Image 1 (tube, one colour):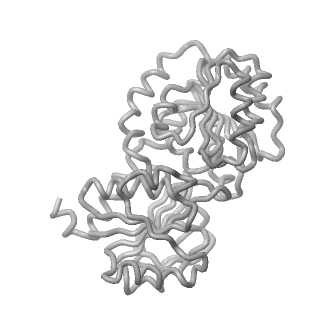
Image 2 (image 1 turned 90 degrees about the vertical axis):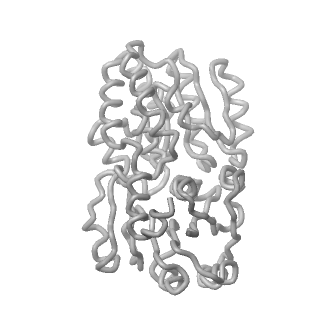
Length: 350
């Protein structure tokens, strides 16, 4: 059985689309599927993990109208499953691929355009199926909510140990994770580091960036000026860094569900419109402190919030309890189970 994932990554859009698609592709590959990524040039540079394994990668033309033909030329025999995770594609693209792919799955979190799909997944906490019912065919299976978040297996594997460590931590903030996307095009990382410096909180600091980040050199110099800080580039084992941290400073993309799975309290920053619903929902239940839009954020706000939480371990615990209740890390397994129902031959073969 072959699956093609149509997902891109770039310095502008970040790596979230590719990373969540990779989680599903890894799960399918482990059960015998052959998975291919169809991505625009530059995706592997933004997400090096995409090009570091055995996955076949097809370069897609910039013009969306040319992409269905490009897929047919590259894989003339067709595929069992086409997974589309791309804000720039809709029912027009999906319909053009219908005779080439037996089934079409869409991963979305905007609910702002029509899709021609058999499966629609939106892993946003609080999302209602009704938001998509008029946007997909009547027979489309809609899955919504963080219970279906596509996480890599290391997150579910490390969940129990991470939660147990948090449950015994009574000493406030000892380790801070700063992770604002592989590219961080707005350089929020620098502001976060200045806030940590101003806070006076004595904690180790792990800073995560991709090798292609525009402000990498500037951030490297800032990290050198913080003796307790360490810069991690092109991180593979993000789950371990999250498990070891007592609090994160991060954005509101797909990594929100990774942090929730491991019960990691977060100071969250909005750097894209599609993150507003995510962070509003997480703040409402107490899983994060929402610092608002990056353009309005001041380092003094970061410093003030860190000082408050450092002296209130009980508040850190409350945030952790709220976060861990949102996502258990089993979303990839749940989605794969449904795919197996659509392709019983693949299930029987494994």
